[in-house]
Length: 128
Image (cartoon, rainbow, N blue to C red; front, side, top):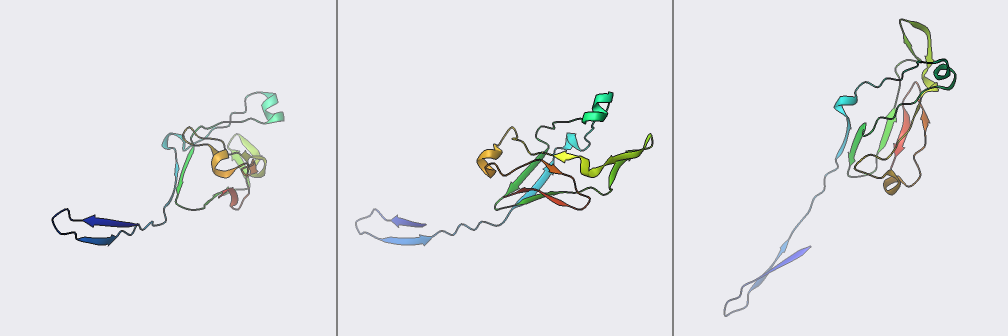
């Protein structure tokens, strides 16, 4: 981008200034502070047979000046509690990406985001 400065006096002087815009890479991922814990409530027999869902609106916020990936991992191979020694295999849990209140994933990613099962090691959740 070039800017020209001209002097409007009796004589005509001009000069050129070169403006450099330097874009440094920026990437952040933030979990909504009020959503650091997500509960899946199994209440009825049907819940145990069919599973349960929880939709957490605006759970993650990602800012990136370039392409990025979001990976998800579980530290253990199952979810368990003191009252349930058998547990639920981590691989039985699916994570989905949906539009947030301030974006439209279809506009950003097309139709590339799909439900993904949790892996014990990290796995790709979103990729741009």
